[in-house]
Length: 167
Image 1: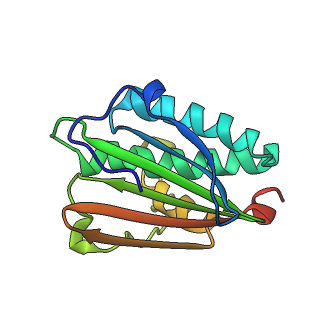
Image 2: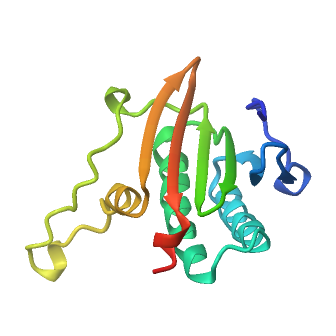
């Protein structure tokens, strides 16, 4: 497992593509939860997932899940703080992708995942919410999602069926 460092190295220096001895293909990215770093990590994740042979339609779904989760970390876990460390660890086994995101930002409120309900969209166009869809999308597009806080780190685990992503 990659250690969370107080200051992460530039993305290009820490990306690893590995074939694990337990039969899982995967990779790990260690970066910071800054806007530009999140964008770079998304681009690199998509490239590496493509190299792993993941279907192009599934890539779009996975990119959406990752973008929502990583942006939440950058915008909420580190809100008002200097962008801190962020580790993205992905492992593929057959038709499932396991995603483990770790950061040292603030914990989730109440140490629990948000419900992921859609915001009220019954108003006029000018009163419609701009946000609030992220956790709904993440929950809707994943098979399972768990969160825990351990020793000052947030751990978000997402499991995604690659067969369902491509449909």
